[in-house]
Length: 235
Image 1 (cartoon, rainbow, N blue to C red):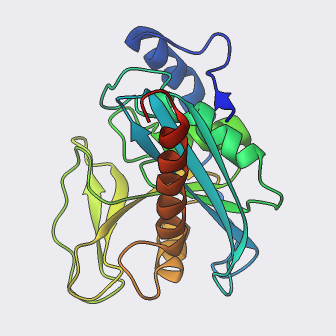
Image 2: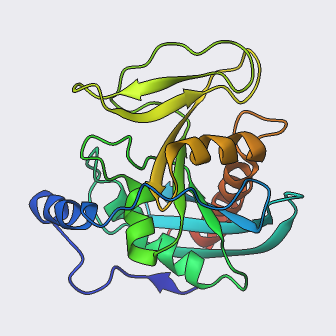
């Protein structure tokens, strides 16, 4: 089993990580519409942790955007490369996520992260970070809000309310993907605007609360982590 290590020079302190966020945030592009929902390919990425063994597993699952059928998938297992610090989780995950994306045998198209883009205290969550590093179009669809206020959206599928920062900026949306079910929390990451991000999320969630990209990637990274843990020392 090959273990992904963080690249040389990867930030090791909170101060260094925040400096990287500040530098890369200036490169985020939010005024591109991106491809129409249901066209090309779309890729879900997700990670799972085994803190006892210091392992993180990442999965990337490419779907045909029209049919939501799986086109390609890949996993990678790495060492946790940064301590747990709220707002800096991308630094724990990105080296292994990049390895999984790099192992794909298909064009990832639009990438959907289980996390945040603009809806982040420093306006630079995983979806933005990954997009800037790869140049890919990326959006964030999170299961829970981070630190932003929002009103409860209407009960109908497609209803939404803004996620608002303290200065009134709309940094994302609470979006209802199933009638009467808890919303998901959508934000633009890189090279896709917020309206398009919400449209893609609805298209990718025809039956369940979470987009199919997230559901498939979540299952795959958990399976990869179980396999890695079984052969790791102490497994």
